[in-house]
Image (tube, rainbow, N blue to C red; front, side, top):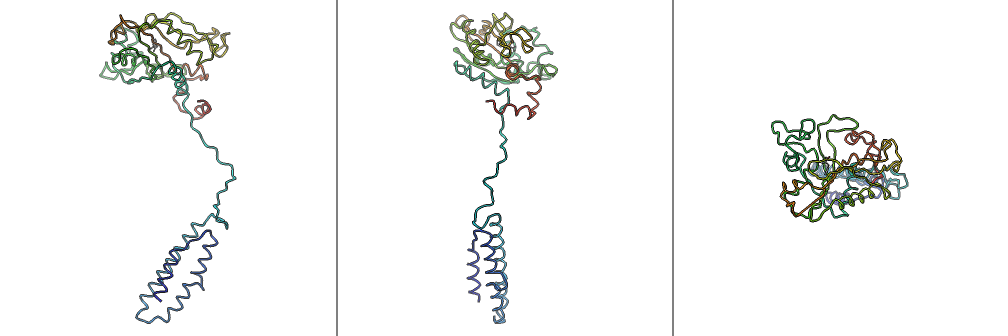
Length: 340
Ligand code: PHE
């Protein structure tokens, strides 16, 4: 009898079932009233008294094993039909897959980076928490320049020399102090200014800065590169116009307008009827800036330009409120899933 139990144990441990029907058939074979284990129970009467205890324990063990095994087979087979195929309905319409999207500012930044990288510009980055030297002094800002004022710059309390950069021009300085020309870099990044947050101003925003320093770099080169950039970004019919301006670190300096991409220059609410949209500041790097950053201004010249990424994104996508860029409302972000 012990042998028979041992043999059934092995048999049951090796059982498998392709589907629920097969599992049920096994239950009947082993566990039903006329099943093999019940038969064994009948034979139990003829076991000699001194062996009853041992055999009884073994029979119980066998019964438990069979129950567990067959339950497990039933569970494993649940959801399969008589053919053994899964109950998954392969013809059902799937749930829509929620695709993420890039942030509109990233989309536009990437587009700008793409255009300039085709012209040989490489990326450079610098810290957002900066020192006064890299943000202002090395860029020819006089000690009493109004941009250093509390109105504009965020200072780190008790360390008036440590500030949040208010423009990406600080990266120009960081690169020039380490590298000799030719330098051709593009610096995207976040900048901070002490402004009240509203639909039209924010205390942080994003800029992208370009710098080219080499022998014989001229204002004509700057103008040509900016024209190409504007036409790549806003379309081949785009015109540019440069208006004289002032920045401490460039001389001469200019502000660039592009012909309005909405009305084509005829005048609309976007360009306030003028037909032109201001998009960036630029100029020839002031020789004093080259010298302050270890580049010989008697040998090299350079140009620089800088623009706000929010401003360009607003023009491309007509986003009316700057705050939408930092609120992460999915209804707003979802509108950009089809963009690059
Ligand atoms: N840094 C200037 C700004 O924040 C932009 C600029 C960059 C102008 C480079 C000229 C050259 O407004």
